[in-house]
Image (tube, rainbow, N blue to C red):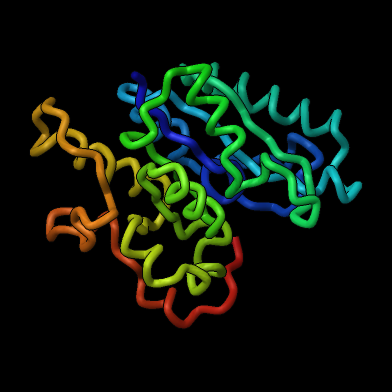
Length: 223
């Protein structure tokens, strides 16, 4: 079976600029491509995103398709193979099956790509990403870019015990690599981040998994 990383889009691999209707508003973090090239050595890569702006009439379907096509081409130019971009275009009140934390797209990926979910990862800046990770029994990593700091307080104690919290995709990638290859030796170790296994980051990982003190007090986050 294959291991996978399911990546949120806005606030995780590109800067969150609200409802994006034009490729000119797509700005990748300067570490995105290097991180994804590193992760794809051991994982299949997927992007999974909620884009309710479509249902609200703010984002045009054609524009969204062009943006995602361009993102895939940009990734390909950097030698990165994104297997699928899974995109829910419904509003929360539509109660659809595909909006995160719904598992519709994950179930499809599992079947189509033979994914080992327990040894896979979900990385994102919203509580829904963490809820999704816990639902599918994957490893969740909550990043503090995008809306990560703004919504940090919404994570409950139980959720925080089952995930890792990283400053951004770069630190998340470093954490995964260190956890995957013990002491730099190419010997895969257990990938369970939570559910009772190593709830508190070890001393060697604290530098990449720390929670900035400002998070506990900061109410808003500006990109």
